[in-house]
Length: 210
Image (tube, rainbow, N blue to C red; front, top):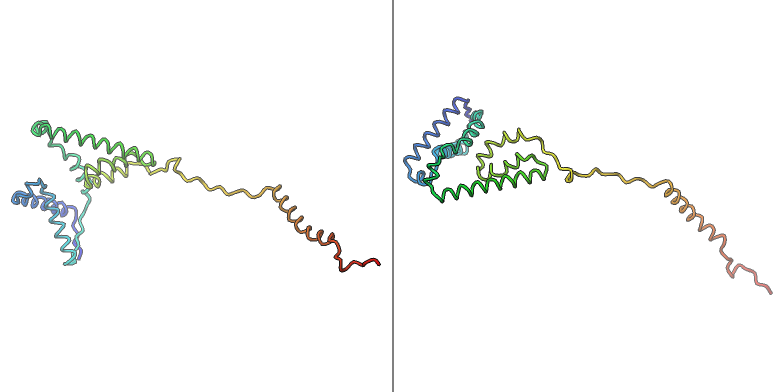
């Protein structure tokens, strides 16, 4: 059995799952201890329910994902909007060191990704997607910005030094070579005839003088 949800029903289910995740987070101390977000808790629980319904109940869910990409882009774009200098001051030297290291690693990853993409004839935007977008941002960040990056980047082109050279057919023998071959073949066929005519008579066929 297939359960299909339209756009309004999918959004309502999303809000319900997020609220239930926050409710579980407030009541289970281990979720708060490891700072697990409520939407992650609710989404993981809903994924387990869907898996069990499909495997043991034969029920599959089909939801409208029209708002999935815009919502993910909005989330990962504003994920650090709550940061402030007060939080940096509260974190102290350790947090500042960690922040500087994260910036340096992100720049290094983007430089390596864009540089290798340029060498292999790929748009640098796709190299950045393979850099800090996915390595530091995670698979969710890459999935959010992936369609936008792939549609913005031009088609992949092969660099000139990596392009396969066109196969050039070897030219046939020249006329001089063909004449030389024909003359050598004719000479080879005449040689046995000349050798047979010029052969000296054997001692058994010649007459002996008294």
